[in-house]
Image 1 (spheres, rainbow, N blue to C red):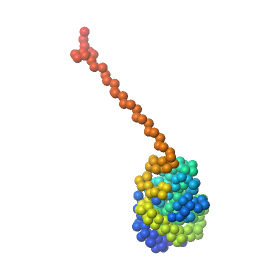
Image 2 (image 1 turned 90 degrees about the vertical axis):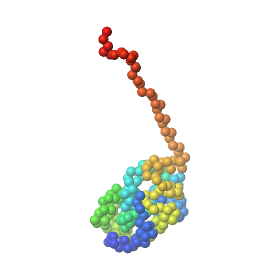
Image 3 (image 1 turned 60 degrees about the vertical axis):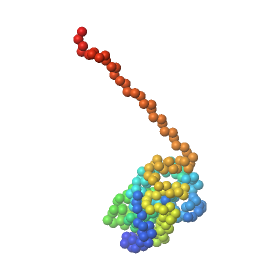
Image 4 (image 1 turned 30 degrees about the horizontal axis):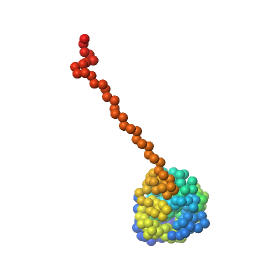
Length: 241
């Protein structure tokens, strides 16, 4: 059974090592993997794409939810679906850490084919399950929509191997990229701070792809306002003859 208190105990080393990360980016490429990906990473897009973007995010982070609901769909259409970018999602849990870990465990439980679909649902319904008085039931309801049984759900959220994986990923984020908050984005091996709009991502990604920015239209020339013709001194429209 999913026990929040037990999960807190198991996760305490992770909480301490992560320093309660705030919500505000080893390995080598193999079959189906881009260079730098772990074998247990969840990713989408062409492994040979010229751009690889790694997002370090938390399922309990409101800013992460905003990114996935408002910006990511456009990035996916523009770059991932066209084979220009590989996207990797890595868990970097923020408070409440057990909920963040449990939520992503549910997505992994759905399997690689359904992982990102369930991730979208978890972000879309974030407020519902994160603030629920019964987080187990709330997450179980979401898991059920992906065909996850109660037994499979309990096994996934209590999987200590998954918790160890998250500890390793969090350590990479902190040691290699000095990440302290979410969402954070590493693009082609470099942490890219202050990317929060579609335009800011485009400004980074397009030059890597050799795409020049579209020239901005020149402003229309200013025209002087028309003035009323002056009348002769002493004249009047109502002058009597």
